[in-house]
Length: 506
Image (cartoon, rainbow, N blue to C red):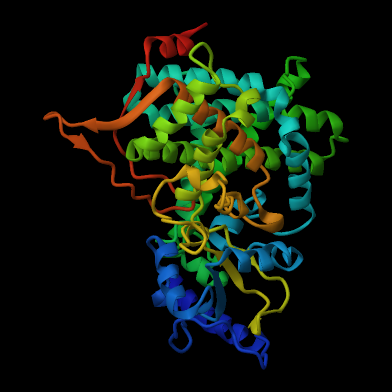
């Protein structure tokens, strides 16, 4: 009689549930409130698979900003409030900095080698040290300012030439910067093999972490031992294929750099600087390789999503665009593009960046944290092993923190007499504690420049259909670990012949 993956799953699930029940500590304190679940399976049927951050807001209105649900005995903690998130994930980061083990995405596919899913251990700390030393502060990034300004101008030039492809051109510009910084590699104008490899890997990462999909191996860890030839074990074949893509994403550019170094032709970059400083042990090279892979795979798509949101907001909220352009015209004039030296003199443009980060956060729900020891908060017991979800979208759209939170109002971040600036979205938009994004300075620096130069040179407005009727973008976001706006059309034109000349200057 053939044994199928469902047979193994049934036995594995039964054993795992018994283990979970026996190993769970009890406390006299209550768990945080939350929707009631069913015996054994808990809230499995309640967990939303589409825009979960909105469902969690609805739950929070009934149960409060700190909630508990369970899935097959696994405690899940949902945090809708920024103060609670800071109290737990920042102030108690020694307890809350691990990641849950994702069998499909992590163990089987291999994404637990990268920063995003790496457990809280010495390897993770080494990755973060590498990245912080290279680009952790604005002063670290000054040597790359010419690169940022060059690529920003090229992006604008290409968008003017092909405005209908603005989304792809933003991705190209982001890839050009991160590949140059990380590997000293100049990407091709056409389909670049390195960029294609990373795009494929990040797409596959989105597939294996998509909340709308259920991988039984994530629910029943014993299934990871099932061979791929067993009927129903197609997940093993998927993991094998995706794992090879990920391995290539890390190995191919790393080997290219090492070959260039051996030939004496390598440019100074993240990888060369670290290799030259290291003892070139196998462990050091492995950590450098995966830190580099984390830097690109983790940074490029988030930056692209932020720029997509900027163009969406300029399409939907023309008054904000007009005010920012008036500031640039007044401070800089028509004869040059904004540079980093102008940043402190452009408070409204700075506020536009802050509002883009708030209005359309690229990570609506923070990558989950794992609690490493039992904890107590405000009289509630939070058991060891709880998976903690910080609802960043809820925090950045909280009407108690932000007036008219669904509106795009950059001026909310500019203090006026009798009205202080509203809370900086950076308090939560880049994550929390020891798992906060180590590339946040690079991200907001490059995005500021792109926003400033785009505002100085382009007019973004609603596109029109064949009958001349304006097309209003939906403003909705796609589901995914990284949230991109639904594809939308907009009109992008140079503000004047003079600004077009600035873009085209060689």
